[in-house]
Amino acid sequence: MNEPYITAERAVELVRWWAPRLGLAHWQISVAMTDDPEKPSGACWISDRYSAATLHLSSVAATNISQHDHDAETTLVHELLHIANRSQHDEIARVYRQYVPKPERNLAWKRYDLFHEGGIEQVARALVLTRHGLPDEMMIPVIGATP
Ligand SMILES: [Zn+2]
Image (cartoon, rainbow, N blue to C red; front, side, top):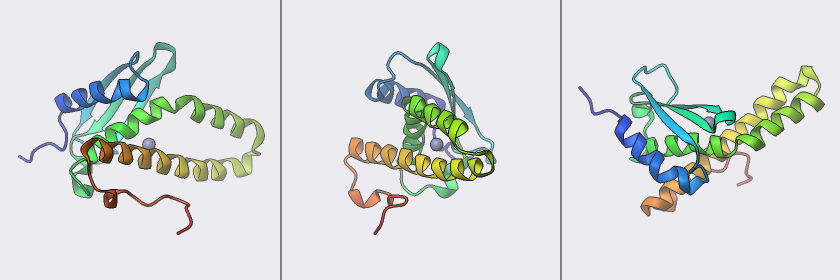
């Protein structure tokens, strides 16, 4: 059997290291692992009311697309950044619902979400590269930026 991409113990350890550094020290963040290759490498369920969240991480899904050794940590930080950015994201969703007419709303939201996800991923990767002193060349290109 292959080594898991990331273990639950390692994920909990990483949450303990990252959460206070992302302003989430008072959050109850639990980790749920899956080994279903059809699931995304990471997802996050957030309960603002209880300052609680569950990170759903795949122990297998990302192995095939792994580009560097810190991809699992990047996925975990990416999901934590969703928690840290939840208010901004919710407010933008509210504005879209209120001001963007329905026929265009889905397309506009998909476009916003693409940039939002790209931005979250870039910050996650930059943080992980910086923590481990890894070279800038491992950074991903900026989505939507002119060359
Ligand atoms: Zn995301």
